[in-house]
Length: 370
Image (tube, rainbow, N blue to C red; front, side):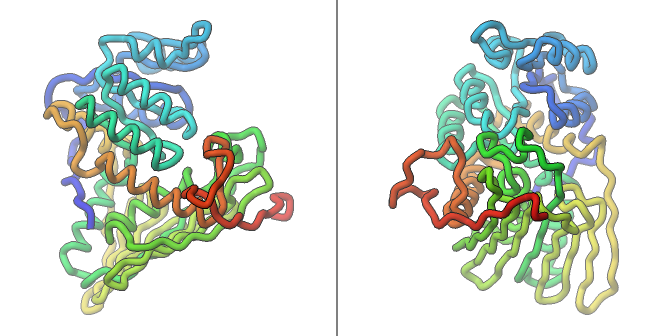
């Protein structure tokens, strides 16, 4: 079972020197995260970048950023932001396929990095980032916000307490049905679209939090004609006989909860499992109870507080979400892709027997049949 941070009761309160933030991209996830970042007393909203000058300026004015940067000629706006000496740490909120390039540029520019999940498109890219951050003595963390939520931390505390005995199995699902648009990121293989990279990190977060790294993984899935996974099923097996069953989908609505079965009872989250407001606990010899949780803002403030705490303490990684864990997660996702035959344009174009992503193609499904 992985370590969990002690949840911060008031993550908005300052814990040290002010930290000057740069934000790359101005989309919906950046909007929600920055709304929470603005709640932190020791966060300085210094700079934001976007490809569009209008988007960068509008975002900066909305939140009071001191500077905004956009593309000028062949120079991307994020490179201009990275050249700003006042920026301490960069939050990267671009689409998946751009994470590696932007994070690599940020580390090479001497900036600390918080990068949206997935940290990269594959484990090779993730390893390059982890090694560079270590070599440069810079902070790097994947923005898996669930890891820092009070409800998630409390769930691990309950499981460690032995109240439901020894955890033996876990079942988690997460799914929704976005409108079909072949131009949208979620349906675009070049952007890392599909259920796996967008959603699977959340069920995996629960499985890895409860059981740690598996000894083996079995994956199956179905692909769209465009070549993204419509849904997938992952089974994680452990040496002691425990296992986890994980399903993610962009072709079906799911309960989006996690259940952990132990030798003396069970625990279940409310929906959505990536930010549950309730935990339901049923010990075999006790009374069913529900624990309720409130979060500050949208709930991103807890991971933002952890980044701030680490930078103020001079740490180059969080002990609760290390770059090595991100590499390990990408290795699991790579293996799932190999078994599903799921490939992206960024992958090697000619699969070989030694290619870790070469596998039997998954069946395809015509979306109109849904």
